[in-house]
Length: 203
Ligand SMILES: NC(=O)c1ccc[n+]([C@@H]2O[C@H](COP(=O)([O-])OP(=O)(O)OC[C@H]3O[C@@H](n4cnc5c(N)ncnc54)[C@H](O)[C@@H]3O)[C@@H](O)[C@H]2O)c1
Image 1 (tube, rainbow, N blue to C red):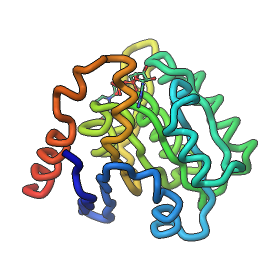
Image 2 (image 1 turned 90 degrees about the horizontal axis):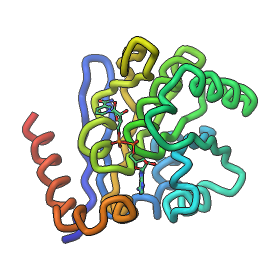
Image 3 (image 1 turned 60 degrees about the vertical axis):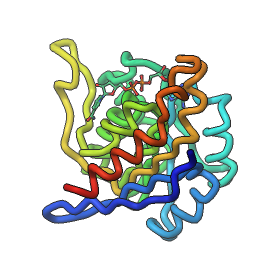
């Protein structure tokens, strides 16, 4: 079953953001960027495991080959102070300013790390969650919890900092079959997302 495009508006005390759910959101990502962030530069922070996957190829081709990308080694170890400092260095070398929009492309690790970098660099810039794992699509990309791990424990340094937009595509989950063959498809992911959508509607 293909889900239809859906937009959920999340209203907060002083702001709001949207969650866009579509089967293949990347085809129109450039238009989406122009709609929500007209004339604003973007930088993509992505999970290195996606390097050879169609997801990254499509996003860079839609955004233009010159769009800066920052590769983060896959895995929980990247949610570290050391990796965060490398991200800051790279963002400043790319001449980030307060208008820049950061796209966090990956699972919960990238969402938490790039989200925290976005919350703190220049006291906060807009960021877009583009979650590519099931957990990140149904949990970590929404709610604005960002964090890194420190020696004393997991997620102990972080910030509540909501994304400006969340782009969810069931299409991304197809490549997860590399990790968990068949299981994901048997689980009827799209119905799962539909359920999440209706839960949000009832909030
Ligand atoms: N902020 C929150 O509210 C919140 C909630 C729950 C969990 N988390 C955090 O989320 C993290 C776990 O997230 P996760 O389970 O997504 O793990 P993850 O980000 O490590 O991704 C799991 C694996 O899938 C790979 N991957 C990602 N997208 C892929 C794709 N489309 N195709 C193939 N491989 C892909 C990654 O490289 C990685 O190897 C933890 O750090 C946890 O603390 C945060």
